[in-house]
Length: 282
Image (tube, rainbow, N blue to C red; front, side):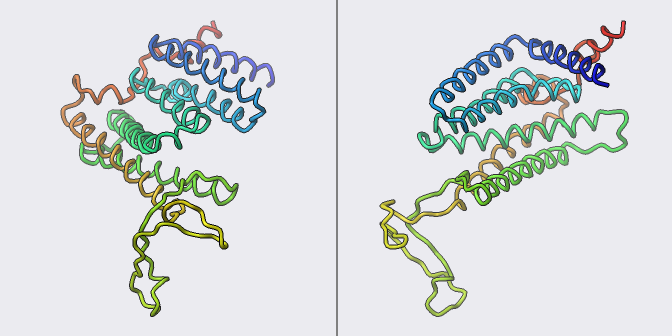
């Protein structure tokens, strides 16, 4: 059993190496980003910031995920899509968290969530499209329903991620749901007559907690606005892809730009795990 597992691990490693090197452009991006992550990990280790070191290790694993998915599910990610996924992972984990781009650039989180909506819709869309063209499946969705499924899949991923952020904040005391400074609040809780009528406080300049002023130049919203903005831009990204995906299915591909974001079924000569397995059995 142990030798069998070792042989399989060796086959998987060899097939993964072949998969990573399949497209020169995506491999160059992967190699460059991996090198930057390793350098970042060394610097963080020197500063004894072990939490960021763990984040770097996690990022190294995430960078391999696209290739693992291609091997496991026998799909071919377009080079453009693969590069965008790799850059997205690096931008979110290394630039966003460790280099604090989320704080330096207020738009950073918005851009990434919009892109996430777009990419998640592409994944959901391709899953349905591959099933539609499979001879083993007995149902076939129209272009409209394919686009709706892609949109719904993307929004589900977005909602699950917000659940994750909320859970991390509540259980581990993080602040993944970033706060927002606002200058107006409306709350029925503050209505002096106790009725279901919003009581409005405008032009808020400062607030105090336990007698200490926070000097925020406004009222602190705890995560709600950030969550809703994330879901809205996720919806925007998903809608954009679903719109173009509808016409892609209706006209069945062609040279459409959207085809650069839709995974396809692997050809037999690109199924590296099968090739490596057959080589070992000869």
